[in-house]
Image (cartoon, one colour):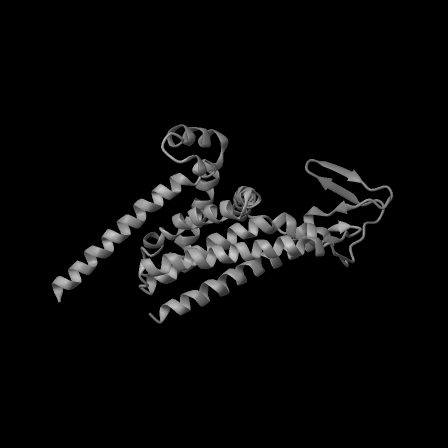
Length: 282
């Protein structure tokens, strides 16, 4: 049982670390993006955090859940211990970080100046798509030198976009109340924690990590797909007659809850069969 305290420390460190890294990368990208403006603009820290908070919240929540499940499965921590621990700690961190975000946002209206040596002289040819313009005089308006921006990656862009879209739904649950937010996070975690056997199909940790990242990407996509209005209408037509009205705001999460239940049940039966084989062998 020595692995259980280590699991708690891992979840705590990973949650805080991923959140801080994502926030730092967002600031760095925004700094570089604005530094490519001539003349350079400033960064509104409060607005930046407001724009990226829920996206980072989703990435942190999903990543921490998958890493925690992977660790618990490899260390053979019993499911009836690891799953409640992941629920309580990750949900608690999510609530605490969101409370801190709401309380500190009014205090983060600081504008960070950007220093840049970039300058555009009259006569410079500017390209934008298939058009080009000759700068006659610099009127003081901001010009963005897109050629200096780093190349974008479609996989990362899709991950950010899906996290942003799902973050908007999570923000709506937060606005609906603490109970709604807690239930929504718990349903998301319930599905993510069921992926333990799938994340550990290989004996190679690196292969499991890469497969976990693919599952992270798939989970974000399927959840956004379930939140689309046509799909929610179809799900609602089947689920509304059989679920209490209090669960109707969570109909987009219920299919993953059902899938997660089947996976958890399969994992539990697999655990029992292995335990029976060991007892018969001994």
